[in-house]
Image (cartoon, rainbow, N blue to C red):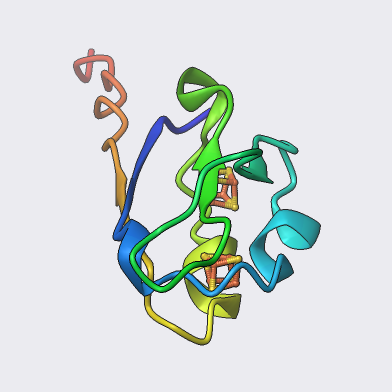
Length: 82
Ligand code: SF4
Ligand code: SF4
């Protein structure tokens, strides 16, 4: 499975929770007891190593909070022709 890295521009987040509902790995949550510059509880990643880079969070977020990188798979080795 692909490996992803998600970057969060925390101060853009308005804490709506949409991204939390769509992450198939359930690794997003709203921070408890912590607030961003706008006064909202920002989203945070609980288990970055589980991110697949699917980018559903970035697609659904109305405030362009996420930047998602996905690691390329190694190309498959093709056996040489006989
Ligand atoms: S890229 Fe996919 S797996 Fe990673 S945090 Fe976003 S929704 Fe979850
Ligand atoms: S969808 Fe965007 S604005 Fe809403 S909680 Fe997630 S990161 Fe924040």
